[in-house]
Every structure is written in structure tokens, then in C-alpha cells.
Length: 182
Ligand SMILES: [Zn+2]
Image 1 (cartoon, rainbow, N blue to C red):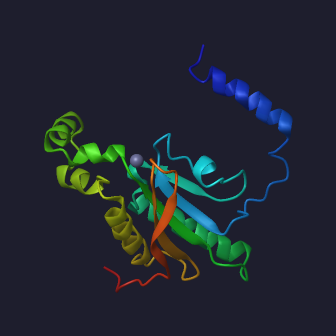
Image 2: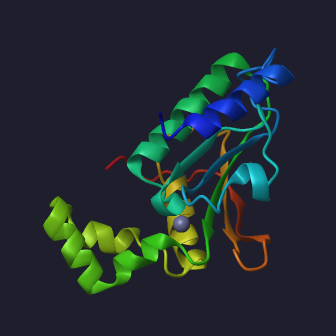
């Protein structure tokens, strides 16, 4: 017995639909989504992102880490190679209200976690999403400053409100503005 049993049954139902057949690796929507791994924050549900629509990266908070920047750089490069005349895609960084990473803003919680894991306490404090509008602005800025990105990519920031189900843009789309290499 696996804890995946119920989901494996759903996979059999999915297989029967044939929906996986003939999909392109190039997304249907010119969008790359970065958002939180919270089970309530699934772009398939709140944005209707369907199979083959868009690459989605999810981590705690939906933060733009160096690993996320590397993924955006890779997909941008791949898109350049595969469709040189193709449209830009927008990286949509979406943070949400009521994020569980907010616990990391609590000094006692954070300190106990650091004791358990040995992780860097100041980095953990920075990774907390308490004010999603503020952290999304920080993360879009960080992404756009990276020299790794294709200049055909744009990035924008959004906040998803768990209470209303609505997503609103808080940082309009902009192109990368890499500074001098550090
Ligand atoms: Zn979250």
C-alpha cells in the first residue's frame, strides 16, 4: 500500500482520457509561473493552467531563488533556440495571502527550526512571505536584475488572495535590467 494509491487511480482515469497525447514542449500560453507549493495555491485551479499551457515552478513562498532564476534562464534559452522568432514569455511571480512561510517571521519558530536544520537564520527570515505585495516586488526586481535571463523575457508580480480567490497585478511587466556582473 502506497500513500499514492488514490492518486494512482486518478492517473488511470487520466490515461483513459488521452489528454497527454501530442502535446508540444512549447507552452500554449506565453507565461512562466512561479508560485507557492501550498496545496491551496495551485495554478491549475486558480488560473486554469491546463496541460501543456505553461511551465510552473513552485517552492515555499514562490520565492525567486537562484535555482528559480536558473530555471527561467534555461526555458528562455530553450525558447530562443526552438522558436527564434517566437513571442516573449512573461514570468509571473505570484505570492499569496496567508502564506505558511510567514511562520519564519516568528523568532521562536525560526530559531527552533534553525536548531533542527542548521540553516542560515537571516536567509530564513528573508524567505518569509508576510506582506505578499512587498515580497513579490522584491522578487521581480531580483529576477529582472539577473544577467542570466534572455532579454526576450519579461517579469511581473501578482498577489493571490486566498479569501477572495482573486489574483491582482501588483508589479507590471518589465524587461530585464541586468546590472554589471557581480
Ligand atoms: Zn505559501
